[in-house]
Length: 431
Image (cartoon, rainbow, N blue to C red):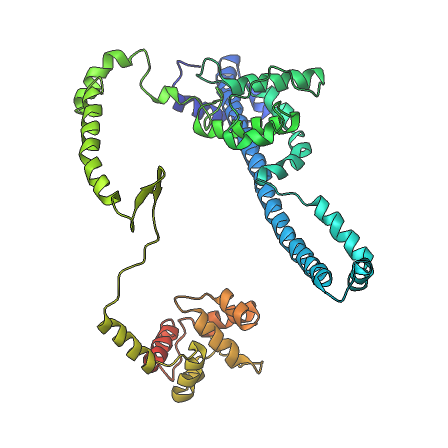
């Protein structure tokens, strides 16, 4: 197969998809097998890519659901905290009341807060936890991931150019656990591939947990497949990126020619020296800029960047702005459209494209909403929602009465496509 042109392989694979099983059986061996081999190879590549894409989508969807669960939990915490704050305020007012003695304090609190409400609040307070991120909610999706993860790891041959790839070692550990039906991780399991933001989730007590370690392994595998650090031999999308580069064995002989064509130093020392000199030239300028207390500065080894206050507006510009604001009243755009319609009567020329007559009393309201919705800053859907109208009616009016053609014979020079923008412009100019 390696000596066969790739385009020829694709052509034969397409033939294999085209022929039926009966047609292939009637062929001679000298023609059947040259078609079947590329067809099987192409099918293997396609299935590998589809399986990897499904794996990517499944892992991404679990992370999305975990982030959504975190947002919902944070909203619940806000509501619970507000209710608990009201209870605390009531208890504080009763406790600080000088007319309530120490012996009557318990009865006074019970009169203001029922015992069942207080018990519920204490129970909610014990159940509250402060998550550090969405990873705390990812553990709830382990049963879903376990439905496809063992078969996915056992079927596809993942490879890497790293000599000691800790991620591949972790995947081998899970293959062995799935084969022997064991649940606990070995004591010497590798955690070198675990990112920093996963460390607390994977090993909160020093030793990694099975469920969180597996989720971290699968998530990291997805990222490594995307970056090309882990690849699949029988894949097109997740294949080895090395064949697309200059071979490592040929680079020593090609280094001089390539660097000469790109005008680069073969050793890179010249480039490093130039960058170091540029850095030395820029450091005095940076020191001058940082040597002040009101702008960007360094305090206790940290760079402090204050907020930009913006440029001061000249007094003449401010006076002109105030004068313009006094002359232009704060009027809603819808009111302007209605007023211009009363002056000009343009709505009577917006007839139905089919010549039909209106059958609803609120036609004018929907018609004005459709016209404003066709403006440059608002769509029909947003306009219908803001006005509390049915979007289907607004869209129908925009199509039947604000489209061109046809143009009404009573106003032959009017372009209905540009009419909404003309009316809006006229309304703004009147303002």
